[in-house]
Length: 407
Image 1: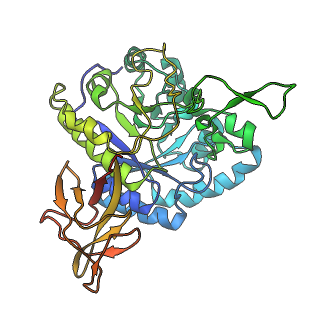
Image 2 (image 1 turned 30 degrees about the vertical axis):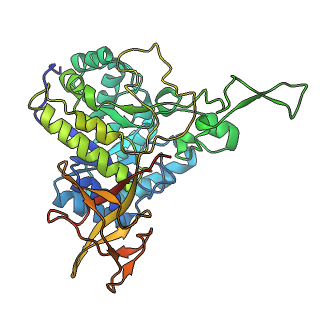
Image 3 (image 1 turned 180 degrees about the vertical axis):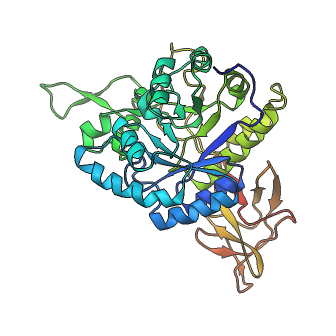
């Protein structure tokens, strides 16, 4: 069984919603990435990969010595297993590192078609106890993603009572459902969260309507902002990584296949730095990590259920994101050198910040903005191709952000 000792090389597992995000995850420090195809995953609206793109992704990850996991964690219907079998046959030559599954039938089909492939059990399976972990191990799984409802003591119990690899979420959006298995979206709109098509109705504002007074709505609580009784806080466990490392976690997972490139780069660079440093010295917690994570769009942060179950982890005041910075540019390189792909509007005179891997960052003042013809522009705009004066350390794939002006 596992011993409660800090591992020398814990895995950082990052989302890859499309090819550019995959490249960014690799560049900013991923040990492993997870992504999906158009079918059988739980992000129907992410930039999913077809077989041709998966071949490219497999080569990119292999060249970078990064593991690639494919999500097949939807709940399947009987008629879909023939299609799944065909997909698995097509995937076999790609030699992916693991499939992420939740449905026992999917696991059985993988064992039939591709018996040597590693299988990881998704959070959708609600693995809440070591006995469940041992069941999945006996079925051939090599890893489980722990239910998000577990406390730190619960996690220690897993490590002491099972030898299966343990993976847990450390950052990203949560939902008001048991490990994500929610029926609200299906009930209201016919869009199944368990099939990757959640409309996030838990984030909506609700009123109460009395049966005999149709059309007359009442706020559930007296607050002009509205009532958000199902709106979960976001998870952020960067400052709790020492406890999780000591508890026996093998892989630390960041949520967000549908989040922005800027979100991915920021969370990747922070958690990469944190895991590298804390694996050497568990007391070396840097306040900069939390400061950086505050600069991405997020709901109020919380530690989830790590320290107890006596809080619903709901943010009922509103459903708005906290957003202090805008992602304004993505650094690219061509035969003529570096240039910037505009992502949001910025102006000459703005002080922007360039960020790269390994926590490299520098504030720079924008003196002038030019197009590829050398003409001076009044502003940088989304989707524009720009020439800027950048620091010597800037590289293809770095990002520019601008602090928002609060009125």
